[in-house]
Length: 162
Image (cartoon, rainbow, N blue to C red):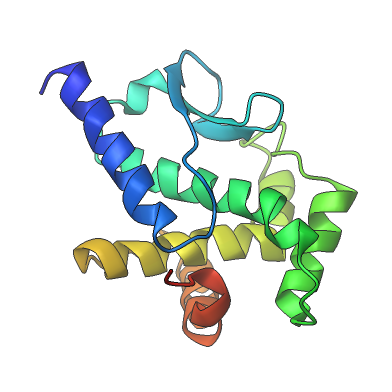
């Protein structure tokens, strides 16, 4: 598939997700980066490792980073008394960085078990089910259970149909 077609599919997914999250379109850039993907707050853009351009995981990367952006742009300004939203706000204010060393098990575990991280993965699970009726399971069973429990319990804060 030509690069232009893949980029159009990414734009389409971005548009579809915007129907579930009250926020505007965000540019997505593919580049040579160390990480898989990240949301760049200064550029207000999602950066995805160019190695993902032709991989099915590109949609997963995009969904995770769209939720990250939503957490920063919308949830961090929310007046909600929902405990999960409050916790996400606190975590973002305290430290919104990604792990520096993904090979460091302790650092990665600390990151993955933050509510903001669980929320991102749960959003991705819900969106894959909503858009394509695809199940997703995280490789580590215990984390997969946590994600799915969070998704089932908090679908109302994960997506809000416009």
